[in-house]
Each structure stands twice: as C-alpha cells, then as structure tokens.
Length: 157
Image 1 (cartoon, rainbow, N blue to C red):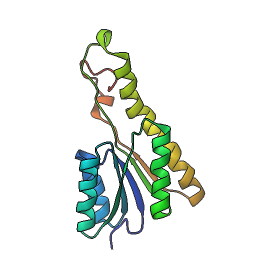
Image 2: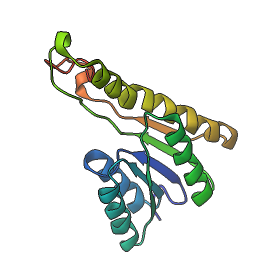
Image 3: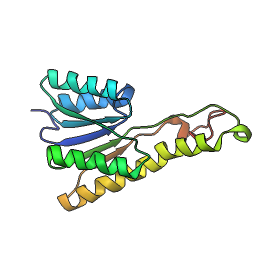
Image 4: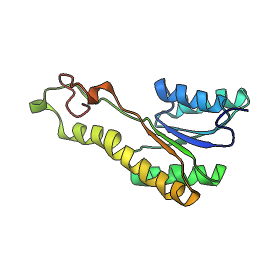
C-alpha cells in the first residue's frame, strides 16, 4: 500500500516535465490523480499510462488563470472522486524574453495570470473543500528565478 492510498491529488501543469513526474509518482503511491493542463494530448496520454499501470487518473483541461476553469477543475474532481486531499500548483510559464521597456503588456498579464493568479485561484478552490473536510495539502511550486533574477524575464522572475 502506497503512502497516498485513497488520497485524491490535483496536479496542474501535469502533461509534461515536473508535473508529469509528480502525477506519476503520486499514482504509484496510490493516489487518485487529476492530471490538469492545457496540453490535452500529453495529458490524456499520461492518464492512459497511469491507468494502464493499474493507477487511477482522469484528465481535466484547465487554464489556471481563469476562475471558471479552476472551479470546473475542482467540480470534476469532486464529482469523480468525492473530494480533494492534495493540490500541486505546478502550472507555470516563462513568457516571452524581452527587456522591460519593450515587454508586451498583454504577455506580462498572461504570465502573471498563470503564475500568480493561477496559484491563488487554485489555493482558494482547494481550501473551500479542504477546510470543511479537516485539512489537506497544498504544494506551490516555484522557480530559482524567484531568488535570482534573469535578464529579459521580468514577469517570470
């Protein structure tokens, strides 16, 4: 029996990279995993791999910068698995590379929408379910860029 047996975990940005590895590990430890990403092809492929290995997973396409999408993500999770115990706010984007004076304002808003607002919306939605249930775990991923800036990536850092 895995350490996450009977736990329900939502992992955003789970179609590739670190999010994918987290979703795979959680499933291997017995969690029922909600794979969420904008990349439906890779997200669905991950769900197929998890279920083929005997795990439990569903894919929910969600843009974490949109409140309606995050609410739908949690509604589908509750509908499918009856609750949520773990949220991994992993979705994040770098955005374009440009000097601050030339940085496109719409791109700036997009990066902050995913990387900051998305984390807030995820935490808010998770807490609405976790607090009445007596608790849970929220993991917010961050980059080393939060400690040391990188040239031309002002919104990200």
